[in-house]
Image 1: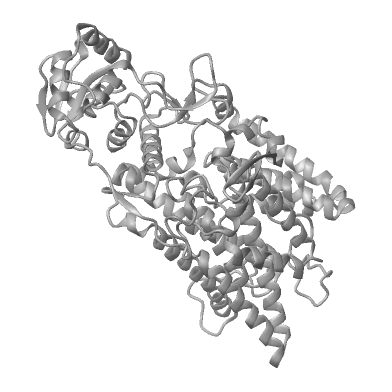
Image 2: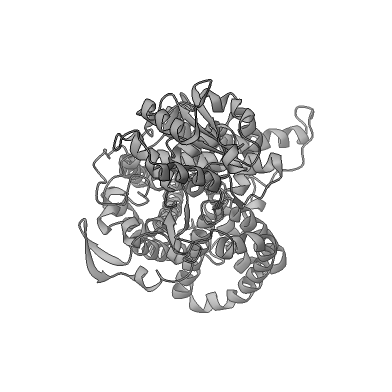
Length: 629
């Protein structure tokens, strides 16, 4: 997802074929080059001067981090106004599921339960968490916060820090290893984190925006080929890969694919040099593979062969693909965008990983032409082109219409793992390639400005203004926020504990997947719930992926009563089926909240099924243990 080989540093000399390979950490006046300092050094002494020099070096980094954090808060700020009462963005179900994932992670930590599979959602069959979004490492790190402040707070903190952390990670790697201009590195990091790709995925996809280790993984792959120390570098890369595995397996796959595109690009541009570098690269990757295989053996088994695993992503892959024209359109949450600007050009408001607008596309093409002799730019161009084409899906598009002409992604769409990837997300790789390209081009502009004098500095200054003007239309706007249905006090206050034993099921009425998750999240996954919001297999004998499960007959009946689609009368057969269903769910209690639609009709039905209910706080509760124990 960035350039490879020994020439990773952007050249700043007048000769475009000159290569700077000096280790950045040894350069004077840069982070990593400071002398040892002592606290309390006497003013004017070498130790005090070194201490002052170190502060001067880290001060720009702190400023960059503050700007990125401010940008992240700008995007997510409406959610912070009331994290418990609002849902951030346009995909409330995705947020609800990820809040539940964080709640379950805290529960698993505090109760020492399996972090990769659970029956606390979709009781009694359970959910394979590896075949969904994973996020075990963030869930573990955030567990104390989740236990103290709740899953909604942890989710919002996570989605906010992802943007700031990803931006700063790219700035750190770019400024230390790729470019000499901190301003250029800042611009590259800003693009990688705040272009439409990650901002749109902040509508409910924290596992996609959690890319703060990706820059270090990519750089370590480059180091494998450059330094010739495969054992050490392979182990370091392995540790980073293992960590990313437990953050987001999907992003790890895309990062690996981006690195493969990077290697192919280098092979095309410098075949002899690439082959010479292959030996240490392959050796280091083998060591990385052994470490990752040992650390991730059980989760990988769970992913591909464990209970409730799935094969492929539901539906036609082109439903979640971009159109070719999306690259020159504007995203919903961009300055130049609007609620209708991306309609029909992409799958939905979350999957807007392209949408750069004409200005950025022209800017990128101009940078590639200007710096066409630089190997890093050629490699980045290859990576951007391949990933952009893959994001279009299995067939080419004309305008918003999909044709029958096969596109390159059709060649791999049936392969394992590729069959589970959302095609639009390949453009996440494109975004990173463009971000690094902008940093390299900005670095060259900075070098020209320093070397020039008088009128010679006018051109880079005008170019800088043009770059800003090109990027301005895609700057992000704040994500919308909407109110959420309050969870009953019966759940939030803990009264449910008197009615549901640990590991047993509480059935919310109507039996709706998201209602189940919101109740469970509020109770930090203290009880099991039927149904849910997840990806699973079609059946025990068919592992083809699908959304959720077919509802039990009683769930369908109660949903129909809630919608006013049937009267509040039930037959003896339906009563027997209801008691069989609560037995199937391993339920201890059924709860009807006051806010339920057609509340009185539902209560009449439940009284008929299970006898008179008991009023507890703001719900009616039916004890069903006599039929389920």
